[in-house]
Amino acid sequence: MSADLPPFPKPQEPLDTPQLLEVGSAPDEPCLRADAARNRARLLEAAARLIAEHGAAGVTMEAVAAAAGVGKGTVFRRFGDRTGLLTALLDHSAKKLQADFLGGPPPLGPGAPPVERLRAFGVAVLYRSAEQLDLQLAAQPEPTRRFSHPSYRALHTHVTVLLRQILPGADHELLARPLMASLDPALINHLTRQCGMPMERLEKGWLDLVARVTRTEV
Image 1: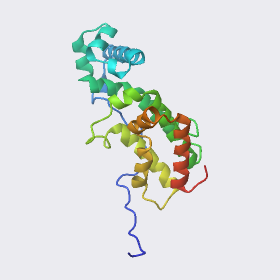
Image 2: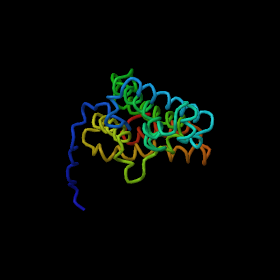
Image 3: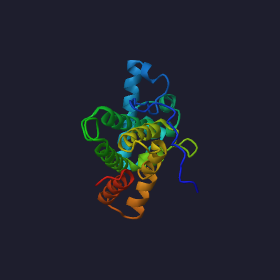
Image 4: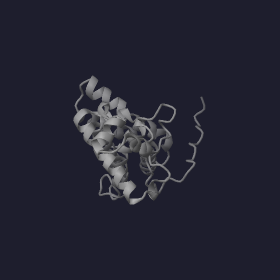
């Protein structure tokens, strides 16, 4: 095998200034009338209460309509189907997380060294997923759309940007994949619920993985 490896491919899009990505919103979402926006918020609040009380399995279009005091057709018109409703429930926390790592306080936001931001990012994603695990699993896109979903792309882009700053000569886009895989909700479910691992162990595992990938100290 030749000692000379081909150069890593350059990213197809500039990633130095990541933008907040829209997650799960319909094309007309920014143009919602005030009454429609209030109605949507009321439906999401009702769905969130149902999840808190009964878990994601308790969220049906009929149950949400009853809890919000509206007709079932209103829920279907607003969200399309149950998957659309569950995805919409994740929007708020997903956008908040993006806002935090793009413009929030360090170390998650700008102002800290990139490796510290990467550590903080993984910890934030881990605990966010653990808190919303049933919802995350229920709303997960089908396998063929999983890695192209806006929510995944937003997180992958951020990890790629940080890796570019930490390891200038690496294949950042590809290297970000195994890091993202360790934050997958299905894996967190398996490790915490089926293997009985505490979150503290997953957090230490993330920090150790970052240290090994970036060749830095924990």
